[in-house]
Image (spheres, rainbow, N blue to C red):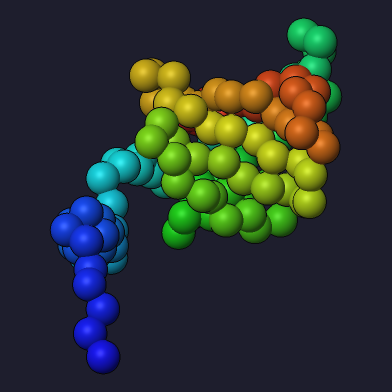
Length: 118
């Protein structure tokens, strides 16, 4: 028994197959930037007040502060999850340091900076 397939169905299937193959074989297009290794002053701010300031290191893709936290790369630097629900972003400030918002439970609660120690 033969089934008659309409040309539009054949064309749609061919397009879907091509898109699927491209998705599987494509190289990721989004560039990522590393937070550079080195020694920094880490500062957590809220409402213009310093909540915590201490020496930090970026080493082997981790932020070493009170513990060792993996840095997840982003196009502008990275972010760190200190614990579930507490995330800080480290976007390059163009002067060797990093700054970004600090989140707790999805809400911005302040900011976070890494200033190079020279």
